Length: 131
Image 1 (cartoon, rainbow, N blue to C red):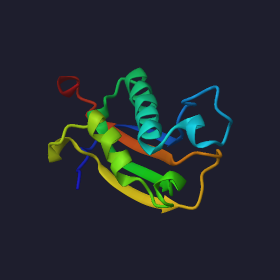
Image 2: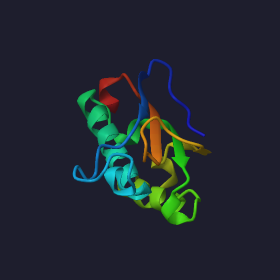
Image 3: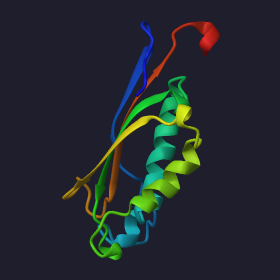
Image 4: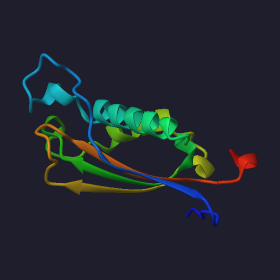
């Protein structure tokens, strides 16, 4: 669990999908957006950029919601290892720096070929000495 101090500044980043991985691939194909790991890296990179632009850091994320679609290339199961391979490149393995996370399997996402969607909530102290 994570406790957020009173007076903290909050930032909510809604459901984020991956950028196109292979512009030459057919939209909706397995290579268009990439596999679970590629999509998660793209999404987390976009989230990091948005956090940075707002004066926040990845370490300010207190809650993450991850939605995964079964990957046909993985026998129709979600690729949790692919998600984790991307996730661990953005977050230190220390428990104190990992946000709370809910990960659920969904039947589909708004873009054909999308396997991952992530939303985050970030909070940071509004006191200058903590920034």
